[in-house]
Amino acid sequence: MKYLFSEWKNVGKALKNKFIYLFLDYDGTLTPIARTPDIAVIPKKTKDLLLRLSNIPNCKVAIVSGRTLKDVSKRIGLRNIVYVGNHGFEIKGPKINFKSPLPPYYKRTLKEVKVKLEKNLSSFRGVFIEDKGFSLSVHYRMADKDDISSIKAGFYNTIFLYELGNDVQVKRGKMLLEVRPPVSWNKGEAVSWLLGRRSFARRSKKMKVMPVYIGDDVTDEDAFESLKDKGITIFVGKTNRTKARFYLKNTEEVAQFLEAILENPKTGILWRKKR
Ligand SMILES: [Mg+2]
Image (tube, rainbow, N blue to C red; front, top):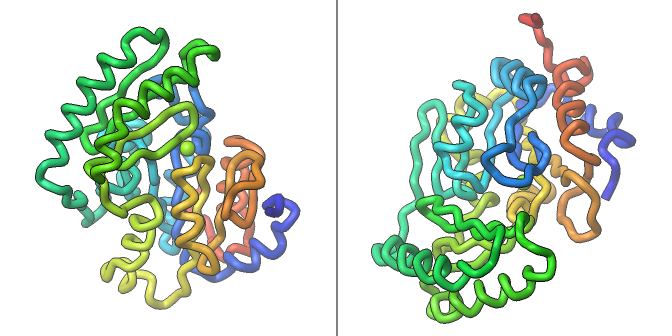
């Protein structure tokens, strides 16, 4: 994995005269990870960059988050952007309104699982169960460090039979465990689906498309995998266990990269309406 800014020459070349489709995760990518998800606010500077990028004719911006669609679109609050919520299960944007079909029993099962998790994890302080409609997130960032292994055990004991019966699927995230629908749909599939849309292909026809995906979490690996050999994949933070080709150190560097796309004449983007 290479540090993106030391490879800027090559990256700039790859972006030159291309239609850039920017896929950005939210938490840990655009905003620093917060102690609780409700206080993670996007910095004004980053929001301005997204606004500018989304108004350029040869650039499209999609936010790809594990948050609900409603939550993530409210947090960004810009119009000309595609919002992907619940790891791809809900997608909304200009001329897009998509909800992944789920098995009919799924919602009932999820409700049942939620009641059981609430009961079985109620003795731990700092555990918070977030109901995201399509999925449940069990956050334990605020819990006592000594309790974490017991919290995980409590979670897996509760979920075990459901997972075995393929009624739900479990995904791990940063200081959270997630119960999700038992279907193979994820951030990677959602990104491929967006890139393959006919209206998008029509719009970008005259230029080659260069997808760029930036993310910091295990759930972003599906997208890194699906864009392997097809786009520029960037991990935020440092790890040896990612499929991304490049890394940036933190959310500030992500903002710097977005700015560089806007400012660097090599990318082929000419920003005329600069304020
Ligand atoms: Mg993230």
